[in-house]
Amino acid sequence: MKRLPLFALPILLSSHLPAAFAGKIPEYCGTSGLTDTQQDTCEAFLDKAGVDSISELNLPKIKYPITIPLLNLHLSGLEKPIEVGISSADGTKLRVQYRKKTPYILIPRDRFVSWGLGTESSTSTDALISQTVSAIIFPPMILVTPFLIGNVKTNFYTIKYLSEDGSPSTLALSATGQHHKTMAILNGVSGLAPSEKQDPDLLRAAQENILIMLGNQRSELVDSLLTTNPKKPWCEFIDLSSNSQSAKAYMRLTKKISTVSKSLDVEVPIDSRTASTDDLWHEYLNERPGLKSWTENFPAQAEEMKECPLS
Image (tube, rainbow, N blue to C red; front, side):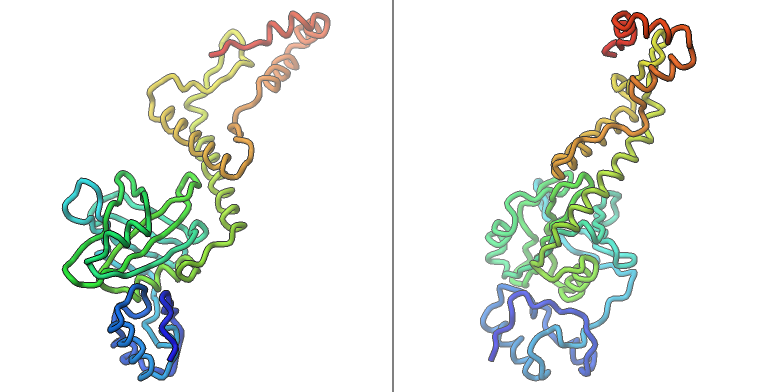
């Protein structure tokens, strides 16, 4: 008799088996860290069903939009776990949101790096989570331990993805129910089986798209920040000395752009909407033929005149 694979994914395939029969499958089947008794129970169920793996069962199909509430994040400084829900409107992105709160994380399909799972009894959850992640950031707090609930088996889901600044991030969830449904939504949105890694070329393309998106967002702020020297109108610069929201947003976006650029090993792009000093200088001279002629005859003095103040 073949042992049930530790990470057998319940891919939602049609089958001759009735849906009612599939509904009897224990929540822990198809996960890792099973006891011998649980392993035997799952194998006996598969034998009775006449199949070799859970993927051959007629499990409920995903219908979008779909929401799975009451998953848990246990965060530092809090005695009780934070309840979160995961949802997908159309299967193209995963939304992870605090219940009754505004903050959320949105993970498009092309930003999934991988996802994995594991289950352990409550007696060893601390060890499991420490092995799964050493430092998981879930802004604005750090995950330190999963939800513990008596002797009920807890399922853990670790999602690795690219954040909005293109850097690798990790999110860990835990739940005591709806395991097959949770696996199905993670598989459906990511297109990946547990522990399967995304194609590096696709991830690079995702980072390039992030870089373009961040650049466009930064360009939208230029008009409100651009300052021109009245005595030297070819001298323009982005004024970040103010404490305005636009200046703060511009600096945040610039930092993110730098992060993505370093990850892609490409030159940090300048703002596409700001003309170079040279371009503005030549435009200024073309409108003044006499001054242009003077600069051609006295290039040293012209270079001194062209020079812009540092700010």
